[in-house]
Length: 203
Image 1 (cartoon, one colour):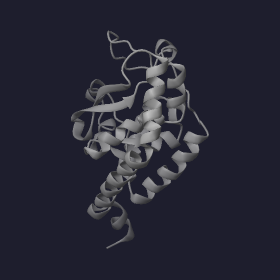
Image 2 (cartoon, helix red, strand yellow):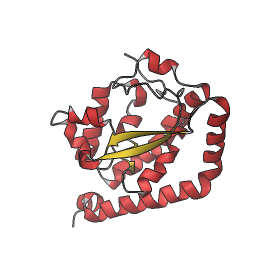
Image 3 (cartoon, one colour):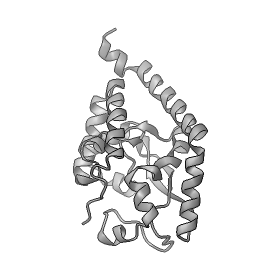
């Protein structure tokens, strides 16, 4: 068996899943004080729920409910938007901005990982409406579990366009291996801690 097949084959996918379960369990086990602190800060600084729960498209386009810490003012009657506008940016709370910059708003997604709906690393999950409009190339994104960390995050994060992110997500699926996951894992720490391209482009 070639080294490439070892890094990309069925056994590698089992290793990836075992890592997902182990990493998310560790975050819950050791990171719960941080999560409690974040929840307390959100509750103390703005009205509304602590968590933001939204339907996203998972592997094969199957919908699932993704969990995040709420980073914006609570707007129960606000319709979902497909683009990040200046109005959306203005609705981010001060604590929400901090959480988004350092990726702390994504911590509740460990629950999605444990449920098998997401992976630590993979294409970022999109709204079902966006997935319905994917071209053939973009549909490649749906062939793997969506991830918390992604290739797009280390190649531009929020500083690149949505079409560029989609292409990088598709590239990830095409070239996936355990070594690529390791590269993304290491570089993600540098990107997040350095707040690289932390500000979302508005339209």
